[in-house]
Length: 375
Length: 125
Image (cartoon, rainbow over all chains, first blue to last red; front, top):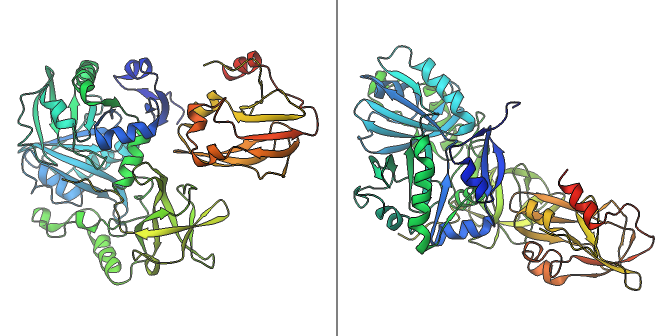
């Protein structure tokens, strides 16, 4: 990308906090403010505040908004109740994943689709093209929202100080319009950290005021600003896939172990949706003879596996590939997500190694996730 | 951030102490440590091995990346910092002190090393 990276409404705030910035999907985003490990630990034990304004919001409205999304996406979107959200995917005709998404039903005839920054244009174009025959409007709302996330066990207490909204009644994967610190917000109980937490969609002009109010409200309980570096290690520990790593157009949801997001039993559009035929084949293949499976790997040693490193058997044969890897602050050891041949995918399989720049380091195979919060 | 005046610096962001009986201590600069982020693993050259100025002699791994460690001078490794092997975070918390990496007995005078002021100018280029 040759264009200068885009800056969020909180850019000056990040710089004043001394953030190390990074170019991410065309956006200049905070990578970390201090130690990324400390930020990670804060989210697991207290709370962290994130600027996620790079995420791509697309609004779909109209009498056939639900039908459009049922046709364009793999999930049963018409079945989502108003005020609830759904994790879903958009695939191409071959069943390959174009993006993973969260879809919020804001009203009977209004949905907000949240795409990854790197794929927002692809998703917008696909929804627009696929929506041609429907009585619904697809609107690019990327510039209409800033997105702040408060994640961690202390996040409900922090938010309670700033809103009258019924947070106790707001379940995981639900969202409701409300006011936070005097700012109009869509309050969603979603996140990408494996902790309880909230995502707040607000007007960009309100982002700084909301950030400051959250910072103040969280001061007593140890809320810290958090960058994308710890967001990645948090989602990795929680076993959550990242587009471009675990998910690509070369992979179907079934290959990624996420076939549950594909709903063949849709009632709209005579059950048809983009990618259906290919996904039926992929579902059978994943059931009968999966080529590779997504697993977790935990290092016995201290060298860190990285995306693209080969997974090898005891005799050095390549049996898979690392898609994400990092030192895990919670486990105190390096961890990885990898696609490995089905024969090596059973937890506890012996003799699995990662080729770390020529050195075959032993790894333990586990079922994802690495970390699950106690509820 | 201040780079100690008594040290000399390489363009690969290592620092080198003044030699005492031909032996200098080597580490990475605070600037380099900040750029890496939290260091989680260090691989140091073995004691007794010979290192060549400008060539890789080890690795530093952080959350996001792995970087080569370059030898700033020619010489023989006479000691490595076991504390930093056991606790790599010392590289971040005390890069010029407890986070030193190895001691080298120089076989030649180092050539292109920078003074603290020259290094400060180099990293703001």
